Length: 203
Image (cartoon, one colour):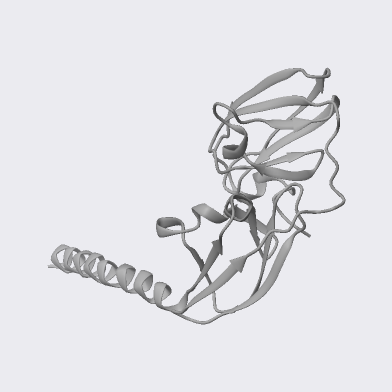
């Protein structure tokens, strides 16, 4: 009799958990609001996105299963691209509502490309990871991968860091000759958000 009671209790608890979990997920989706980032130019669409100081990806990918869902309240959106001034905007997210933000990236007049360059190509996964050169955001792996793509830098020593939340950051130092070409190959290892390093956090 006692064993029968225990079995019935376990079955009841399992059944109750099946009801609670979907309800919790549904309730959470009802609380969150969506921020949709819209860009017209290639620079707009390929720029990196930070929300409240945390890098989350690039503009063009933040849709469908990667759409940007945030808790209600005020959030700061920062969009960055090498050679462009930062685009920043504060948005107030409402529960179960969509807020659209038009991203407009403007060229930074202070940017000067070196007359003599070297080329770094990347073969890295995930391709949505952020790339930093000498601690400055340069773009995403996608921009510097594949035929006809690469990152132009001045000859000499540079610190390269590739980071993405949920993965261990990859860091290396290169010393390039003028007009030298090189390829960096690596696969980021999964880890906790803290292992992505401070570069993907904007203070």
